[in-house]
Length: 215
Image (tube, rainbow, N blue to C red; front, top):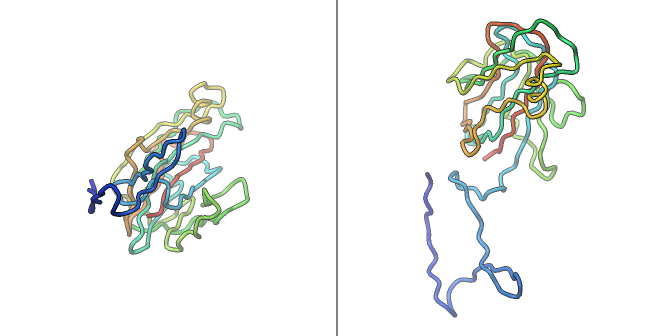
């Protein structure tokens, strides 16, 4: 954990100015909370990767996200799989979905569109339109055909796609989460993530969302 690298000696009546804010006619000291990565909480730009309408498939790499920048770090705070249950399917078993690291950028497939207005396909959008444009070295694609070399397994979920099943309906509302609260996944230079399905094809369609900060 990163420790504070400086301190401030305050002497009443002299010294540095401290920020305060009046509450009920009394001034209270204002503080700003920094994460262990050294950034003030809420200050890094935040983006969301959205993949809508990826048909299930045995051993299919549904999408990947890769950081080819030499200095930037992606702090992934959420990674979800969401079953598409607006189409009837029958006689299904669940789709086993894995989240893994990758050690090479994906190739082929369909590259993401920034700020895509389409309701299907793959997009990366700014969570705040005042954010800077996403660095060009951060890329993503759906139906990845090559590259996206498998790294460490980060988690596995089983997604049931039968539209009348209560569990599938719940997963369709909130998604199956791969990131534990308070334990983000850090994607450093020349690293990436991918959602890949297991060896059983199942039936239906899956959607994916990844929320990440750029540090």
